[in-house]
Amino acid sequence: MIYREKYLAEIRGFYHDDLIKIITGVRRCGKSFVLQQIREEISKSSDNIISFDFDDRFATAEIQTWQDIVDAVQKNRKEGLCYVFLDEVQEIEGWSHACRALRREQCSVFITGSNSKLLSKEYTKELSGRYVSFRIRPFVFSELMEYAQQLHRACSVTDYVIWGGFPKRLEYETLPEQKRYLSDLNETIIVNDLINRYKIRKTEEFRKVINFILISNGRIYSVKSISDYMLGNGTQVTPNTVQKWITYLENAFIIDEVSRYSRKAKKELEQSKKIYNCDVSLNSIRCRDNRYDLTHNLENIVYNELIYRGYAVTVYDNNGREIDFLAEKEGKKYYVQVAWSVVESKAWEREFTAFSGIPVYDRKILITNDEVDYSTSAVEHIRLADFLRRDAL
Image 1 (cartoon, rainbow, N blue to C red):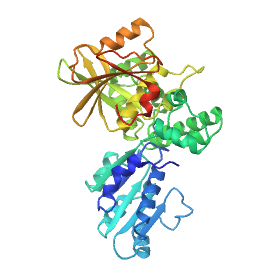
Image 2 (image 1 turned 45 degrees about the vertical axis):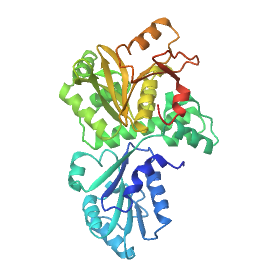
Image 3 (image 1 turned 90 degrees about the horizontal axis):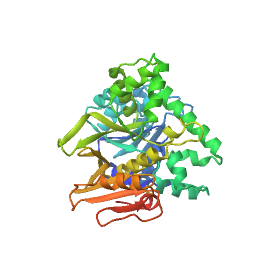
Image 4 (image 1 turned 180 degrees about the vertical axis):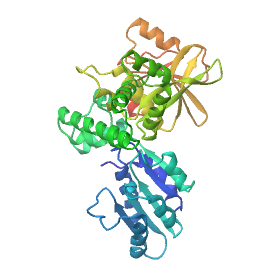
């Protein structure tokens, strides 16, 4: 597995802190590997380290309660600051009691767990603000390429736009094997992390709504429009239920809801937002006949890359002309349009005129899959392949 320095750099300043460090994110994004890399770094300066992986219940069978965790740490620790790593900690009932107890006993506690359980409101409430959380995401393109090289696999930009960055998929040689893995992962996320977690009874309706949401990435939506669409297709579900289910997806880090900001109204447009998937494979595995949604997946890819690079991102309404992203970082604004191609004159006009009226001192960027450079005096055109290899805009 590759060294994920971006995340380690964010967490490193808290290694010796008494706040509980939560490493979270969607299932199979690499949380346990990040935890392992933190442990390896700390081991260079301390041997006072205790680890439990509760996903391996054979190895941790003697631990059944939260008090067992505390007792095991106290029995095996050394004098001084003890570093405690609890992987998949949600398997132990009352885990938060163990975390609170250990931090009072000169322990620096790191935990990972099922994303739909950690960071839900009741769990963060249990920790009472005594935590700091770090979200891990599936690979961005640079990470995917690094891992592909380690595995001696070929991986293209188009492959990434379709099949995304869940790390383990690259360990399978053939596309059918990768698709099987991603489909099974999707089923685990939907059934284990959502249906079972929230005890959803209307499972058929839930699956239909979730499928619609995950193939609607990069599109403006409202809960009422989803409810109306489902009703028109024979599934009755209220807007309130749709919003509740969207919240479940957010809590599990399966999607991000992104607000739209109106330049004219100078405020966020609360009634309509955009949804972006944590990984575009969640769209592609739902496509039939290999008709993949390259256009919206490309927009989703750019969103994921911008978030990874530390930009605050909103969708920008430029007096009725939508700009895909307003990306802000360190006091600078970047207006970003995304299109698969602007070869056709109508596409060129649509994408470039969206920037009309934007202040000249703010950067205006168009990202496409075209090889030809379409930059103008006002708008910088960046090829997708070049954008994916950059560290910043």
